Length: 205
Image (cartoon, rainbow, N blue to C red):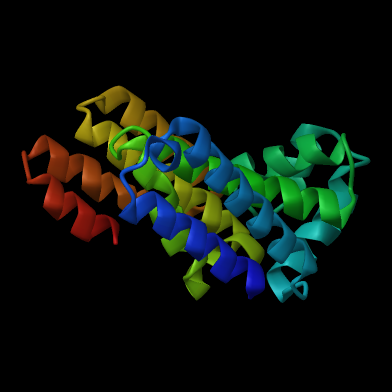
């Protein structure tokens, strides 16, 4: 809790001052790095949930089999299984797996936000994510959905930029992590029908 309020204090400096130091890219990077590290630490020290326990157990299984066997033997989507299989070749440590998955989701979100939000305002949005219980559920419990939501966010930004084929690519990636991401197809259809971007946001939420 101390570090949470410490980050909040540093964030206020970014928001309420006009000094170049607190509006610089360097200061923004420091804030984002601190937030990412804090999120990883929280994920590692939090109690392991039922879903995460299954992911970790499956990690040990796929370590000793081939990729196609891993996909064939799993009931999960192929994108996530492939991701697990690749990580298992490096380490099956629960600290490693949780740290990497948490960090990747945070980086995907930051990458999406960089495309439409002024860079020095990204820490504010990331801090908002850190303040939501549902965010921790996405990175600690329903991990496949966590990746899907992050990829759908990039898909949404691609639609905003009228990069249709790239949006479809990220939709496919999102679905390969969790089938519920297929709802993202509604966003693509609404984009083709020239719905406003605000409508896209409502659908995404």
